[in-house]
Length: 262
Image (cartoon, rainbow, N blue to C red; front, top):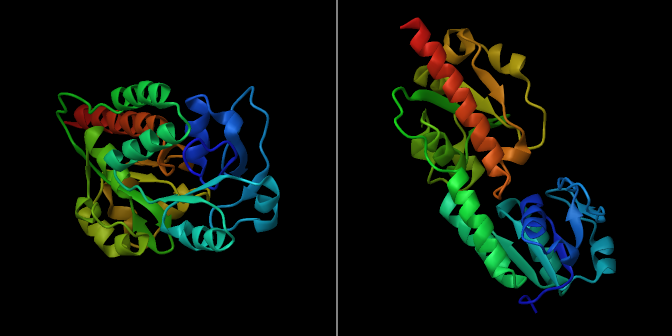
């Protein structure tokens, strides 16, 4: 039974993080290896990567709910259901969908009041920047081979931070293959700021700067290339406030640079 679940396995980090924040961490019995255990909390068994899972170890934990996220984990969710486990599979892509998912998790563990309190904090900390005088053109790179532009919530955060996503028309594309862009098109759109987070791999800023033909891009020429850790921007949960702060700082720095030159 999903409602009132007491032995939860989280195959995605943001779910484990959220359950900890709303006071339900004792219900989590296993997590993905991508979950960073908060201070003062005993580590849980790590039973999955992102696209892989240790099914026998999951079975040994006897979960009454397994939480997965995204189409990438759909094969895992299907296999777990075939093995008889209750599975909650979500595929949130926008900030509104993220809020709805976090509220749902709060209801599942009976922590609605605390979930709503933390959601209010989440909304406040993601408030749009006011009185933007200069909107930097931003390219967000989610993957480098091939080049994949940012998922919808990243595009929304760039806009809220006072930037202009150069591939804003891809915001409605829910699957990563639909957001593949060409190096030539990035050049043509000439971003002034490049932000990157490569799905768990360290970003190579020098590789980005050294791409053929990219020496003329404003962001490359002026060294406005920044890595944002995946934990702060690619996990659709409360930690997006960290990524949002980094985006704001980056755009503020570029805006100051721009004003100094004009």
